[in-house]
Image (cartoon, rainbow, N blue to C red):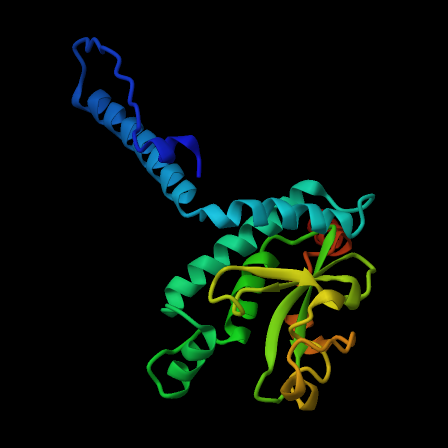
Length: 245
């Protein structure tokens, strides 16, 4: 947390004001400006307060890992924005979904009708929707799915550099830790390996197969791509047609 919050105090500076004779309109303008300043300060304090202490290092580390996917092509600012947004959105969604503990328990509450949202696909869709709005230029969003149509199915975002294999990307999973964003390289995710949840899983949960269970859901990936912007050619044609008229 910033030092401001650890100390538990906020200092406000006051300046003397001299009000010359003014009209009611002038006073209203002053009040509006002061209100906007106060609102901006309040929002700044709110967003700063929403950063969980344990998330700060994770945000910085994920930024570095995303850049390392392709240091020559990935925009560091874009990597930072993706990391911050994914972490904050994951926490925010957990609050909105009413998650209070183990995500598996929350899934059970959904099944009996006590909760409406909060399964893995909800996190993937909602975090992905926010990232899609950013129109990323150096990073690509994918929809990943593990153990599809089985009881242990999981869905998560996978982020790669452009023209990079899905299996070289980073899993962003808001569901797995109940709102605390979990991230890992696709190939290093030992919680989702082929065979771990079946016979091998019963014999020894720590036995690794080295074969990732993650696969790309192409339809889901298409849903994460922003709609194309208007083509320059069509704009030129419109201008030309108007000029001809």
